[in-house]
Length: 332
Image (cartoon, rainbow, N blue to C red):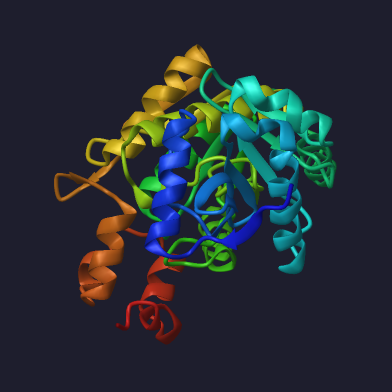
């Protein structure tokens, strides 16, 4: 039977999508790049969405499941990704539906009680992490890790790194690679390297698409605390536990405490629940009786309070924030 294919864009079409997802006990998320659907006359019978390089929210009306509409939706979405030059992509589904997508040549990355993340077979997670490990020097003794965004690098970040470096033979810093911050990945990497060049047992590498990214934690940069965010936190940390820790021989993950940001605090609590004794929370240092945070640094930089910045950031960050290039980031 022939159905009408639609790029869902109008408010009516998106409302149809929300209703179908709800009818099929799936959650609608507004973090989407595009949404498609199949209509039987005026009735939406199948839908699927893309966010960046991740396929999600695939649903088919139960009365039409004999027509292989899931496969047709998937083919259409993969075509859209390929037209954009995206060869590496992921898919979210529910635990009860994972077998279907595995039969469609997707490999399981991680599964929690609420969600399953799969990937296509172009540079899988094992391939990616083993390649990165090969680029690192051989390490002996205790190895611990820190995952950081450094938007930008502050004395708070530096204190956490130095604390970890003193207690371990090696520190691997996974710098969040996703470019959704005020400072680009290249700038954050440059500032982090310059700020830590005196710490000889630190190794800085990109976080990859498997830590705090649009694939593993799409709501992270919204700083929202919701049911969806909690689901993604569980997934993100489960991936770290199942892959990063054994591949890189990581004994512990270090993190700074978070007295203000509810999302980051919830992420820390989730880490403790999943990693147990393999997570260590370091109390954040203060300046002027307040914890140092990157958000305060960005505010001061925007307002050109350079005299206050000197007490909050390492010299490389300060020089960048006061430079023409750094100040251009805050021009409205």
